[in-house]
Length: 153
Image 1 (cartoon, rainbow, N blue to C red):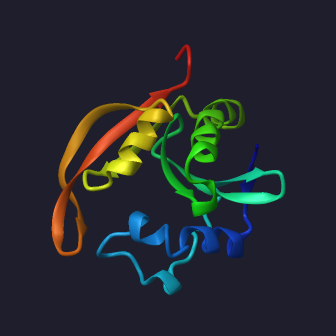
Image 2 (cartoon, rainbow, N blue to C red):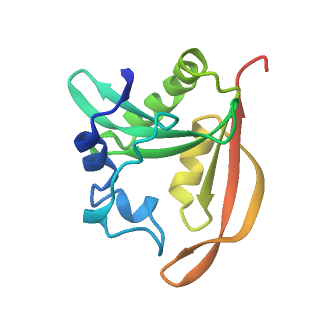
């Protein structure tokens, strides 16, 4: 598996707006799938993961500050299962080597139990709950806050 920072905007858009992914990474205030565009800010990292020549998906990394970054997962259906678990485990060392991040956090809507379990498999630990902080289908939902720190930090 390989990881690389990408600015291939059409590829990034195609992954995030995949019909099997976008409903899970958007909320009631997100643009329609066809209208979504990647954030083209140099601070934002889109990390594409490949298995041989096959694109498995991406992670979006957004610095909250110099050492604490937020991570968003967008893995294509072809990667779901064992490939996704392996990619998530290999991503951590890549992040620690390629970025200045000392901590990576994510927020998972409480209704997305699959994403929550996936974050745990990837090594993230729950540290809190942000109550009623995301709206989906007209209803407020809690977000589960998870994170992982650079080994030795």
